[in-house]
Length: 319
Image 1 (cartoon, rainbow, N blue to C red):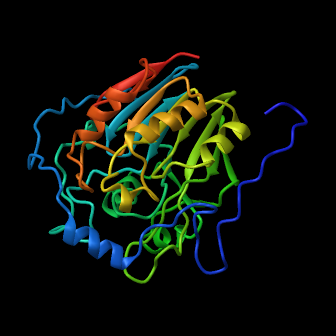
Image 2 (image 1 turned 180 degrees about the vertical axis):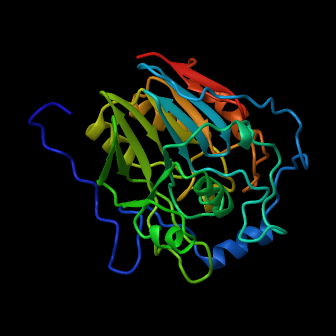
């Protein structure tokens, strides 16, 4: 922001007991979940697709380049100035509290675990099982190298599993690490890992600032005014990771997940120089087919500034 400019405040989003989406629709309730499940007609997708060409990322990337690799789903390896950041990591077979039921992986991860470089910071956007995968986090802890950054209320779960050090942020709060500032920013979503913890923890996106270069990871979010707020506060991102999947049926999903068309609008509002689609292609979590979001984005995205990467593919951006 220009020196001397006032810092725009993010809206209130906590009522004393629960977090909520300010000035926006809330996630649908239990009866709507039943209605969706009873009426759902998901597009068919193969049980498993053997088309991933796994890659081996560099151990570190020096200089001003940004090297980003889509591992799978919302897991992205961001490498810049010798620092490695990993978002919402999941290497598990299912997105579930148990290993024998729940949405199952339909594509393998784009980076094999043994080829994952040392991770300095892990960013967790919220506590849903496809974004906060405890088995993967335990494997990262065993390496002994990572700091974990989570939204408000989530640190308690990680500490109960001896996943530390963990730093908890609310919207508008920041954490400084060598060479970087990590900012917690709004998203429109919801939280919960069981029947009794609905919206008791926060959800968020993250802005990573490094020497005036801005990288934005949106996490899970619906379309809303927060994209303009983030651009106003931090400027246009050099790179933005935006979710495009789990959007059908719209009557149920629109308060919490963007469609590909809405992701394009968000990309334009942010004025991001480069966008990368996330939250697609690995787990089928809603009624659209596994690769329908990718196809729709390619139809509606203007130009070549909004990229659709396959698991294991990367993009390198210069300063």
